[in-house]
Length: 152
Image (cartoon, rainbow, N blue to C red; front, top):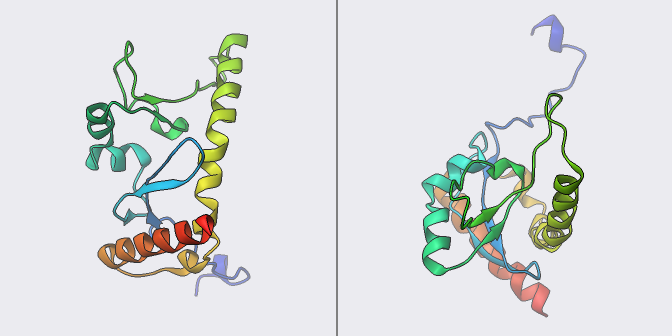
């Protein structure tokens, strides 16, 4: 055992051990769809591209409010399907209008963020270590159980 890790317990939490899912909710925060499982190291943009989310939303005439991890996914400036906030950096400060737009987006996204919370309450997802196909079936079954519980 290396001296560096001797005094610290190993938590086992690392992106390569986890799973990555994308979800869609309606405006009230009810879960509608969950993507197939991907390795935890997968970025949101990569998963959205592989699942063709942008094309499906555009074909259905729908839009989505997303967090900053989906920046750059939708390049159509005139008719965006995926709306994200503005990103600030040290060199680029946000204008007051951009800050207001981020606040409005955060208020609109609050029910969406709360929609995934009942699914996380199952707590079995934190230690799930299985192949991607089984994890997908398991999570979609939990989605059905969660929707039954929320609607009850």
